[in-house]
Amino acid sequence: MTKPKLLLVDGMAVLFRNYFATAAVNQYFRTAEGLATNGVQGFIRHVLTAKMLMKPTHMAICWDMGAYTFRNDLYAGYKANRPAPPDDMKHQFDLSKEVSAQLGWKNYGLAGIEADDFIGSFSERYKEDAEITIISGDKDLLQLLAPTVQVAFMKKGFHIYDSYTEERFTKEYGILPRQFADVKAFMGDPSDGYPGVKGIGPKQALDFIRTYGSVEGVLSSLHELKPGQRKKIEEQLDMLKLSKDLAEIRTDVPLETQLDELAVPVYSPALIPMLERQELGLVARHIEKFSGAPQEDPFA
Image (cartoon, rainbow, N blue to C red):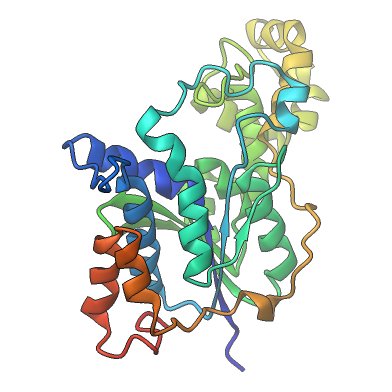
């Protein structure tokens, strides 16, 4: 029996990517009231194209719901270095979720929980029942790879992805996907604002985990390390442990949904004129391009 194909979309990652790609060439696709819709329309078109390419039977869009999460409770500097979103983008956060829901896509997000944690929890819950593809730009998600889970990183336009399977990751990194958080614990993550162990870079961090298997394995073998390495770790032990907590994606977020509730929707005949009324003409034309009968799903 063929397994369902579940597409998990990192909504904010896709939205940001499309906003900045079009803003860079001054294409904001404003409404009559002057509101930019470039991020929203790019996000919707990106997901529609992914549906056409990947042909999922089920899908979910996972969202960050505000900048503050439980990781900020662990470390005040978490993502504190990220600039505020542009004014032209702020109203597009809610609009993206609204249009996504109008298309029949299921949206998931919760204040204090990151989209990554919803994606991790969906992956953990359904990896035995479905073939899962995650769309994102966040390498942290590599730790979720499994025989039935792959991660497709957005690369160029709407069509080009750099896809990782568990086999590719293991061959390139020489560790298991679940050990990636241990690597991040040592090397830190400048984009997320936590330092790991200062003085230990990506190559050394990866060598540690290849040799000792985990943060805990390194700590139990400190006597085998060079004096300089041992000193750095001992002096920053608390940050090392904290960085691992920050790097690990949660897979236990409660999900009050069943797989069949995530089935790819069938579009209503009223969808295209509704989008036109909302001044989202690029999305409407994108659907029309692939469907002469809008009551059917052209991307199923």
